[in-house]
Amino acid sequence: MRRRIRLTGRKQLSRTNANVRVADVGGRRLVTLTMSDPHEYSGFPRDSRLVVRLVENKLVELVQFGNLDSPRVTAELQNPLFVAPSCQLRVVASDGQRRGLLLGSTDTWTLRGDGESGAEKGILLFKPAPIAPRVWKLDIRENDYPIVYLDKRIPNAGTWARTDPIFIGAVLPAIIGQVFADILQQDDEPDIPWVKDWIRWADILMPGQKPPYSQANQDTREWIESLIETFCRRHHISDRLVRTLVGEESEL
Amino acid sequence: MNFPTLFEFTDSGLHLFERVVNGACDEQVLSLEDETLVNRVAGTREFQVREFSTAKEMAAAILQSLGTISLANVLSRAGLWAWLAFVLRDSLYPKDASGRRRYGEVHRWLPSDPNDWQKAQRHLVRMPVILLATLGSNADHLLCVKPSILPEIREQLTSQQDMFHPAFQGAARLLYFDEKSGRLRRGAGGKAGGSPRRLAKVRQQLDVTWDIFDLTANRILEILPKEFDRFKEAAHE
Image (spheres, rainbow over the protein chains, first blue to last red):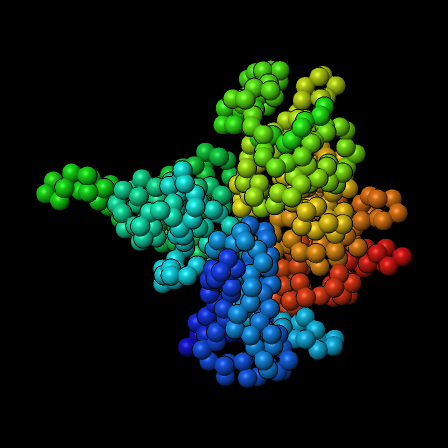
């Protein structure tokens, strides 16, 4: 079993043990926090505070859930703008000189609204949002995986984007291109977890072809083109699209 | 020049604005009275274009004109920020000796998506307004320069998602802003030890040990490593 060792002394808390949800109730946005296994928190001082940190679009909100002795289940969200903030549960010391010391934390994850599937965690996220007249809009964020907002009027928008051959064939390659154009603007591979995952994904598609950081535009464009080409070939993107348009019986 | 409200460019106005900036047509072509090019932003107040000595002064004037409209509601309205960039062009993009206006990199005048983590901070109007609205005087070190300048300290200390917090920026203000002169301290624009560039890096390290938003600005100063001593001493003078 792989164990994570943290040199800072804080405890790695299980992400699956902390269930955070946002719900609109009577015009207010409430955040709920439930912990399925309270024993995981038994080693902390009882006055340690439970804080959920939400970050999106450079806006930060700390949602306080009391302390371990008397935890709260709900708290009101002040920021009305959060759509899919990155979220982290933190246990923070509250006594004297140690006040503010981080005792434990989960990994960050993207918080989705009520009723959405959270099972599709991948390197690209999908989220319904009021973006009409646009159908989709890519948001490349610093702290979390890129997210594709989809016109919320589309039924089961997330599933549609992941399975519709037309969306996959016409839009996904453009998204891949945009994300890597953004990543390759850096001088070197940034120490950002989602970027590392995207680079790893590219390396699986094109083993050994290192991303051309801080190189000429021409090199960057060629590398991205080559990646998109490989992706499309590997997943038979064009064949699937044509099959949808002209029917299964067509010869490809 | 006085405007009865704030305005925003329509799609046609934005297109023409881009052509003006790129030198494809003359500034005079972009008429601010043409209703096909500009719309009033409902609910905003009078706005007076004048020479602003600092980005903070400019941001304060714009916030006053926004009145009770939430900044959140206008953040992604590119037409508004582009209109402001255009009407404030003499302060933001002054003409050089040859009479040419240098608008510089595109995101300094045309706002990128507010979520764009690499470029959103570069707009010379929108970012100062966001900083003043969210941080107040804790943004003094980021806004104490001429509106036309995008200082290294602003680029560095607004580059990460979770930097927009009064505790962290309050600490940065103590380190780098000279209250007496109203300017940045010497060395605040560099890249060496103790510089804002290093503070951005060190913040990421502290973030895995401390809940830094829970600390006061002075407490953050206490836990900074030795390389910041020069600025810490100045902060306590």
